[in-house]
Length: 212
Figure 1 (tube, helix red, strand yellow):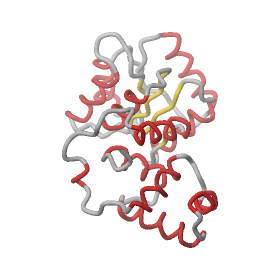
Figure 2: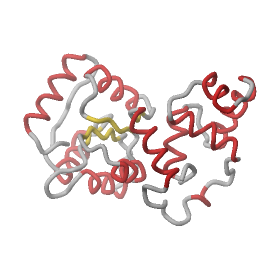
Figure 3: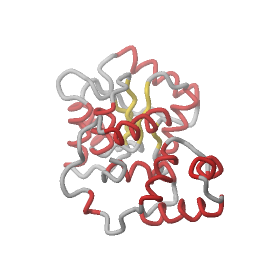
């Protein structure tokens, strides 16, 4: 979904060149996009956030309200912390800026189609820092309590560094820990967040306010 015809056609052409991705429908606003999802049942939705009329955040909410669990990859020019967080909380599984390469875009589409998540590392890292500084709004009441296994202070430190794309070795150096200790902390974080995927762990933590 994108309100600019030229952009939509360009994305379609690029994805066709990349191979392995078929565009089954296009839409110029949230309302027509949701209708297209109902009609075509796609594996992934590419979604811009700011569109005239019914925008991307509305579309995300409507997809969830109708229990249409198609993975949504936000592709936008808006590099705004509050907007990113709002999209993730509304159920987006991915977030990319329009300066990515076609290979990165196609790879993200395939990742979501396979059940994964993908957020541009620079976006995630900056958002985590903004959450830590209080530069973005508080999470909705009750979300923190939704987790029965809260993270320890050390696990939260490890998770923040994971969000910035740090490897276990880098995390060990930053926190002055043994690599084996970091590996144990990472395993504990993934277990508590019920995933084996580091990116998905970060997304779930953001959804539930565990990094705020």
